[in-house]
Length: 218
Image 1: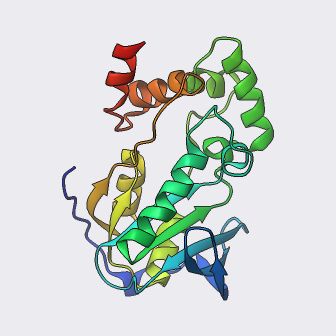
Image 2: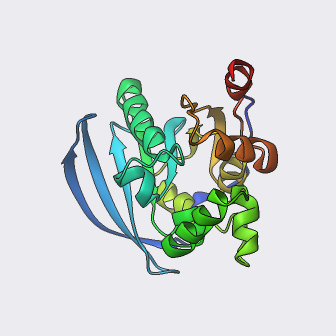
């Protein structure tokens, strides 16, 4: 995927986050520095997992939206839990990188209860975009400014972005973080999440080229 350049002056940007705590966090993937932040705009508590020296250019970076059902419970409705594990593994294999875990992004920003209501509508035949809209909510309400603020705090000037979502790339550029490369994070789909992934590809412009082979086999 191609390089995109952003124009920025880190020092001129007021920060929307406060760094509260640093602590070593040992995980099954490796040992990270967990950095806790307070979002000064929304009040959310945010966390970045940092591996190695990430200052400067081209740190491998994942902006991971909170997903309780996928991340904690292993829901097969989405691919979030698989992507979380794969991103942490990729960062460790790279030797340096960041995962920004974004609280307040549950259900693409609509909240846990609304997400569960949307999942019920999907079980009744709506796709993931239609379900949000049927509830009177945006298809995607996420804001990535806080992620950019965290990266600025970490003295990161450019990233290799682990994502299939062009909106994340565009948001980082808008908030002054250059994206030198967008690195796909493609998970093997299964029958429970294939309709969801197809909707993300067809209606939300996510880069999911591997789905064609799955469709041809079904």
